[in-house]
Image 1: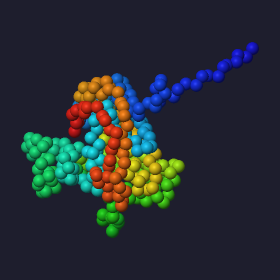
Image 2 (image 1 turned 60 degrees about the vertical axis):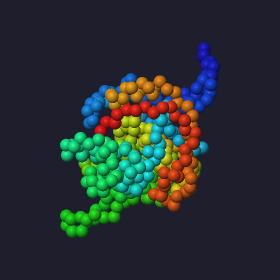
Image 3 (image 1 turned 90 degrees about the vertical axis):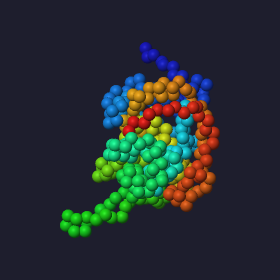
Image 4 (image 1 turned 120 degrees about the vertical axis):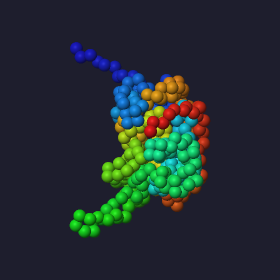
Length: 327
């Protein structure tokens, strides 16, 4: 006798709470943080601090209705991250313009080199002040080498001039090329901005972590997937996720498209061993609220955005959580 099975009762998607409200996007991040801290592979790393690490993780965020992926379980200084993004788009590689805006994201790497090479135990604040006030000092000590912005808007090329000899050719502006290709051939699978220039890695203060951006158009919406080879989940991720979403919105505005999804994919996703207090504090908090972004205007090009163009509303985070940066 054949047993008749009753149809299974439908179950609620994992993304919904018992009360049927959509699960806050930030739980993706908090769940990943807990997993890395509790199950990550403990290893020594370049910085000497040590990490707990997992390999391969993805977080997806829907950009509909102006939504932005700002963490609410701690304050994220989104203006600082935005100033860095705008700086990348200029192609500048010297920290002077950042320090002038009191953006110290990149200061520790030139500072570390200066201290090693001179023996001067200068404070971070004094070093940054000298970078701002002394142009010659900034030229000598403030340059990071051909990091992100250089590769984004001026990827080097070389032309043969004689047998075995080459001269520098015109740089490639990847960002401008992608804007044009999104407009002229939206269905292409080649909308890519790449920061990993193998020939120049040794000249960079830090090889690119958020290295590859791929854009995708479907149903009039622009999405972007970021592949990040190395992610400091405790500190860096919040800025990386914001900048991914902001760049996607900027590109969408320039290409007359609606924003779709921001998809973040991490390779080595880690927490530093000295970030235990940060992890414990953040995992004790619950996310709430929704930040939105609107642009005050439509700039003439992707390279003409200013910090005043970004208007964030609805952001009510919990208190900032401090943690040391590993250089």
